[in-house]
Amino acid sequence: MSQSYETLLVERRERVALITINRPEKRNALNIQTREEGAAALDALRDEENIRVVVITGAGDKAFIAGADIAEFANRTAVTQRDMMLGRSLFTAIDTFPKPVIAMVNGYCLGGGCELALACDMRIASETASFGQPEINLGIIPGGGGTQRLTRLIGEGKAMELILTGDIIDAQTAFMLGLVNAVVPAADLEAKTMEIANRISEKSPIALRMAKEGVKTAARANLDEGLRREVDLFALCFSSEDKDEGVRAFLEKRKPEFKGK
Ligand code: COA
Image (cartoon, rainbow, N blue to C red; front, side):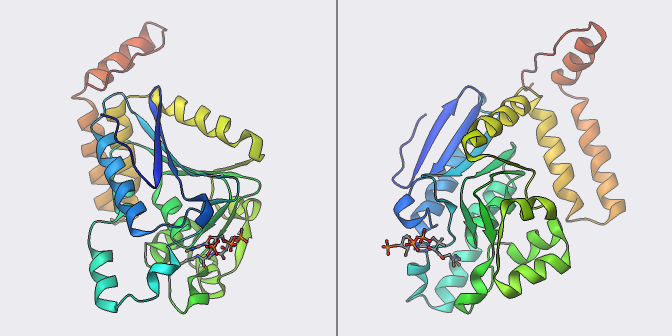
C-alpha cells in the first residue's frame, strides 16, 4: 500500500495523508518527475478508505513550491510543451480528487506552485508565505490554470494585476484578496492545518465528495445548471448510510460516526 517516491514524501496520520514535495534545494520546483509522482501518490490515496483528507506542503522552511522547474523549459519545443500539458495534469488530479485537498503553504508559492495551491480546496498559509504568478518575467504566462482559477477566486482586476506585473504579495495581502483561507505564525502552521484537516476528516466522506463537486460546479456551470446539479448531489447523499447515521445521531444527541457507506 505504501509506495516510495524520489521527489516527495507521503505520511499517513490517522485519516489525513500529508504529501511533502521534497526538493528543498530547488525550492520544491515542480519538475516532470514530481508532477508524475504527485499524480501517482494521489491515485494511491484515492483508493485508501481510511484516508479522508489530503494535505500538500513543501519541504524546508523557504518554499511551498517556487513554480515549474524553469531548467526544464530551456530546450523544450512548443509541441512537446503542449503535449505535456494536455496529458495527465497534477493540477487536474487535485481539482478532481474525490476527497478534500488542503495546501499548507509554508513559503514561496509562485507560478506553478500558486497554481497547485489554487487547484486545492483550501489554502492555509504561514505569515512568511508569499504568492505570485511571476511567469510574465520569463516571457510566458501561467499555464496550469492560473489565468482561470486565480481569476475565479479573487476576481479579474486583482488577478490581472498579479499576472501582468508578476508582483509577489505577502500572506496577509493574499488573505485580504481571498486567495488564502487563513494566515498563522509559521510555528503554528502545521498544527492549525492538521486541526482543520482532522475536523473535516470526521465528516461523511460521501457528503464531502458531493460538497466538493457541488462547489466546483459553481465555477463551471451557469446558475440554473449548478442548482440542478446541487439537487442531484444532495439527493445522492440520501442513498448513504452516513446520512441515516448523521440524522439519527442528531436526534439521539450524540456525535455521528460516519463510515463512508
Ligand atoms: N525552477 C528551477 N529551479 C528553481 C526554481 C524554479 N522555479 N526556483 C528556485 N530554483 C532553484 C535555483 O535555481 C537554485 O538552484 P541552484 O542552487 O542549483 O542554483 C535553488 O533553487 C535555490 O534558489 P535561489 O534563487 O538561490 O533561492 P532564494 O531563496 O534566494 O530565492 C526564489 C527563492 C523562489 C525567490 C527564487 O528562486 C525564484 O525567483 N525562483 C523562480 C520563481 C519563478 O519564476 N517561478 C515561476 C516559474 S514558471
